[in-house]
Length: 346
Image (cartoon, rainbow, N blue to C red; front, side):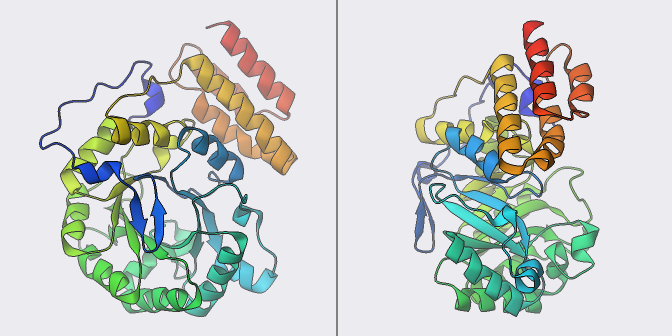
């Protein structure tokens, strides 16, 4: 998959035909919530904590952000909110994403999410990871549409904020059921659906099948957000032109590149390309990310930072060696020194 960090020059945007509709520069309405951006930051497990969201929001202040997936069972049994549900009162708009397969657990979790400040509650019905699906959560709900409908209905009844769903096009190529599934979610009260254009069997491999997102958009009346292979301004425009979706959600394209959501948002609002960050600017961002993770999570933050640091270290001479070194850091100072030396050699 191409990554924004693979290029140091501005993306050249081809002439799209037909032109993108004007609604893409207007606010996105999710039930009673109005979001002044059509570009959303996807929930990513182990990534979209408060630190990461703050970096993304710096460049996309009006975009909807999502927490990492929160297990409703953890909230139910532990009775203590996990740190991944920690929401800063100033980071709006914000959605808390929940997963489970029990309507009552999810309804209670949604109530707690709203108490924490969630503007919307999102239900994960798309995660392909075995440890999630084998317990009935994530994309396994595509095979249990009646249960999925019950879940949405229970959560809608439990909270006053809009309830949304994030899912995939189907279990595998023989079981692509997003059209019927989407109709069920809408009927149950979901106010928006985000569709990753891959099946569960694809995982994150192969190409996203945007044509199914297009068909879903033509079928449903609630907003449809396109997800999958949105890794540059150009791919976002191509996806929107091909699907007619109400917006796009960025996922893996933001790994080590928290600038992406803002770059797409800026283009949709102005028709202009933002100058991409230089290598030095990206590495300075990595340093800030590392320091903030340590301040937020302590030693655990340093261990979690290793993957982030390796994602930042791409697209320049010496990046391979730097990635290897950053993947083993034991302290903030070690990481900062490595990055400083890399910058000095550019």
